[in-house]
Image (cartoon, rainbow, N blue to C red; front, side, top):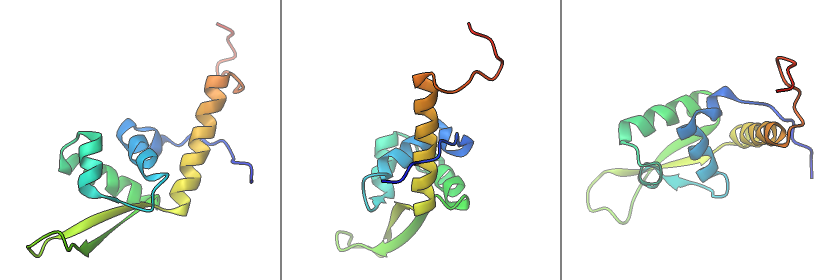
Amino acid sequence: MTQVEARFDELIHFPARLRVCGLLRNVDALAFRVLEEALQLPAPQVSRHLKALSEAGYVTVSKTASSERSDARRVAWVCLTPAGRQALDGHMAALEQIVGGSAAAHDGSSG
């Protein structure tokens, strides 16, 4: 198993985006609707977060026809990319350092 470089990621750290990445971490893909329901956010907000993550190369969104639908609308599937997984793992490692107290204080104070 390779060592993950701890790297705090401001983009992922935003709560909704951290939750998106966390939800995608252990699955191949999730339907947009599933993310919307899990996050309890309106579709436009979920779309904005996915756009930010997509522009960074952390997620991909693809649309496919659905056998469950009787209309022509397609299902949007969201996947965490290898770069997104690496960024999430690095961010989580940085958070673990912070929680574990192994990161040096930035201001040098001891409390």
